[in-house]
Image (cartoon, rainbow, N blue to C red; front, side, top):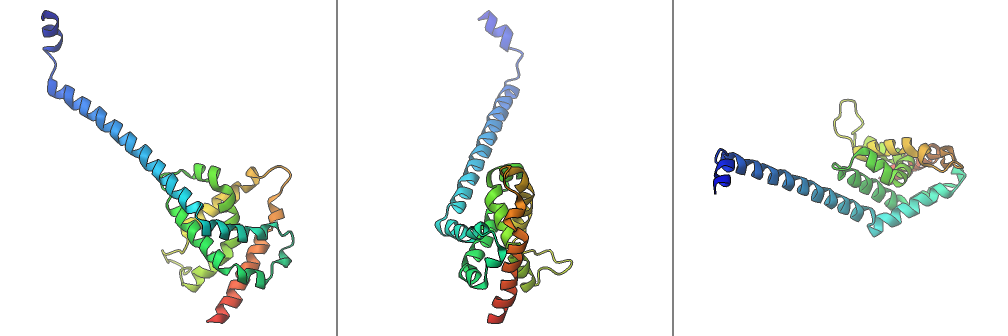
Amino acid sequence: MYFFDCCFCDINWQTFWTAVGALVTIGGIIYAVVQLRSQVFNNLQRIFTDYRFAEARKNVFNMLIEKDHEKITYPIISKLEDDIGIICRKMDEFCHRTPLVSDREKIELWWNPIGKAWGLLQGVVEYEREKAHWNKKGSKKKKWREFENMGQKCLLAFPAKLPSKKNVKEFQFDKKAEVIKEYFEKIVKNRK
C-alpha cells in the first residue's frame, strides 16, 4: 500500500485521463483516414471497372492500334461518338474522386488509360468547351478540367513508362486527336 501511495499520489488524474483520451482520438482519426482511403479506392475501382466504361475504352483505344492516322475515318468515329462521350465524362468523374490519392499514386496506377484517353480525346474536350462557351478568357468554368489536368500529367509520364522498344510518337496522339476533333467540329455541328 505504501508503494502505491507514493508513486501515484502526485499524479493529476484529470491530466492522465485527458492524455489517454487524446491518444484514443488520434488512433480513431488514423483509423478513419485509412478506412476513407480504402473506400475511395473501392469507389475508383467501381468506376473504372463499370462494364459500359470498360467497353467504351476498349472500342476507342482500338484506334491506337491503327498505325496510320489516315485510316481513322469519320464513319469509324461516328460509331464511337457515344463511347467518346462516356469516356470523357467517366474520366472526369474518376479524376474528381481522387482527392485522397496523390498525383504520384494516380500516375503510378492509371497512367496508361488516362494518358491514352487524354491523348486521343483532348480535341473533343476543347470542342465541348468551345460549344459551351467555357473557353472564354476569365471564365472560371472549365468542362472536364480534372480530366485535362490528370491526362496531361499522365501523358508526360508516358515516355518513362513505355517499354524501351516503343516510342510515344508511334501512337500519333496529336494526329489522331486532330481527326477526332475535326469530326466533332464538322459533323456534330451540322446535325443541329
